Amino acid sequence: MDILALQDISKTYGSLHALQHINLQVKQGEWLAIMGPSGSGKTTMMNIIGCMDKPSSGQVILDGVRISKESAKNLTALRRDKIGLIFQQFHLVQYLSALENVMVAQYYHSMPDEREALEALERVGLKDRAKHLPGQLSGGEQQRVCIARALINYPALILADEPTGNLDEANEQIVIGIFKQLHAAGSTIIVVTHDPEVAADAQRTVILEHGRISRIVQNTQG
Image (cartoon, rainbow, N blue to C red; front, side, top):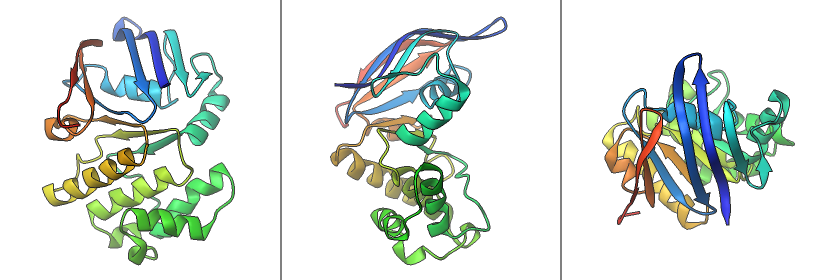
């Protein structure tokens, strides 16, 4: 079953063709990587998949919902309900503890539940750091809080933008290890990355060039 389908998606900004005739299906439980040089369309594609932007033409179907023509208000609700976003820059609230940062995501979705938030932190190995502020955590720990926050509402799709871009090698391996556990448990994951080693752990890698899919690689490792 496809959790995501992009059907002849194009996106233009004035005379700039950011994406051109993109066709892609992602199966439920699949781990997909998106790669390409700067300006290839990775960010635009991520924004469309993540309900942060709409295509100029074509259809996007996410978990059975045609999102291409939805209003901005409905896109916000879809992003909240169906997508777990993980950012390179973390975007944690600096005056809130790790636990409170996770609970913020619950607040916008349903009701905060401290027990569930603690369980999410435990899944990423940070239960003992629950009361620490972001400034008291390492970059790797902050990224793991970001992952816990993305998982708390049981999203249909986990969408990660350069999740290891700001991490050293040791913390990169910890984060990739968490993704492997999530994938093994059945999560659908899309990772936008410039790192071939990160992409190699996915099942497929989509290579973008000049706003088009130049090729799709079936990874032997993923």
